[in-house]
Structure formats: C-alpha cells, structure tokens
Length: 116
Image (cartoon, rainbow, N blue to C red; front, side, top):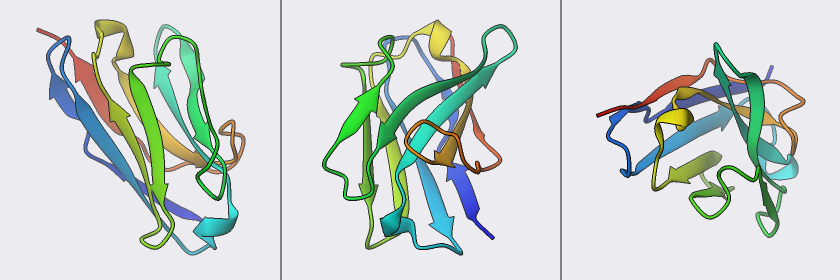
C-alpha cells in the first residue's frame, strides 16, 4: 500500500519561502511520476506541479510557475516543493500524490498558511 507523508508546512509571511517534503514508502518510488496538489475551501482541489520518474521533466500550473520548484531524490524516496515569493492565495493544504497530475493516491497533507 502506497504511503506518502508530507511535512514542512507552517505559517509564513507574504514574500517568504518555505520547502515542503514528502516521504514515500511501500512502493517503488523511482518508477512513479509524482506531483503536488493543494486544496482550499474556496478553490477546491487543484494540481500544482508534477515531475516525471527520472526527475528530468517538470510541469507547473501557471500561477506558481517561476516561484515554485519541484524536485525529487530517488535514492531517499523523497519529493520536495520549494516555494518562493509566497502569496496569500497560496494558502492551502498541500498534498503529494502519485501520477504527474495528482491522479493517484495522496498523503494526509500539510497546511501552508501565508499571512502577515
């Protein structure tokens, strides 16, 4: 059974940075495309970014491109999302998920709050 555990969320001021992580286990992480998605009460569940299994190709939604960077360490079974220039509208619960567009299984999420 796929296990995904997100961490690193918290409170950050607008314009600040945060890196969230996802520890993957119980499946062959290096063979899976992975992604990050987020959920807010107002916007629902939306895909944020994806990365192919080898890490050499990435994709981003328009609103985060240039500010967020997805990466992975297949040796450590870890997925990361570096978030810079954070905006209040980035406030959400962030989930890592299997699949390039978060169509597979997901973890329990980590809360990111951007507020002054």
